[in-house]
Length: 76
Ligand SMILES: [Zn+2]
Ligand SMILES: [Zn+2]
Image 1 (cartoon, rainbow, N blue to C red):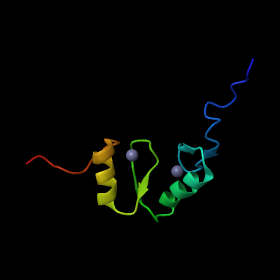
Image 2: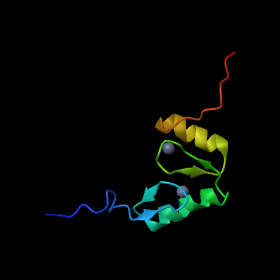
Image 3: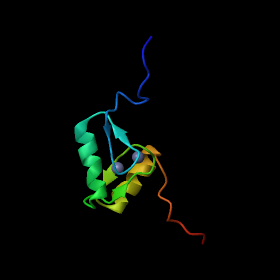
Image 4: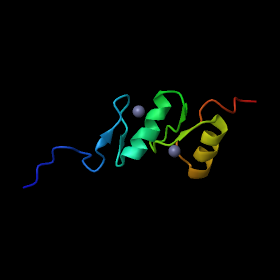
């Protein structure tokens, strides 16, 4: 009987600053840049993508229907 020790053993690279995990070290490294401020805009859709510019993040969220941009479009 297999021991299900980890629920995410195919994503061994876990960020120590948030709950995201990654299957490749490269992805974790890229993600970690968000915590150092190099790419401060991170998608909140759980995909782990990060962006240097807010408009790039917003475009990703619209195109991929991923996460929410949140603070735009106040009622007019
Ligand atoms: Zn993180
Ligand atoms: Zn996303």
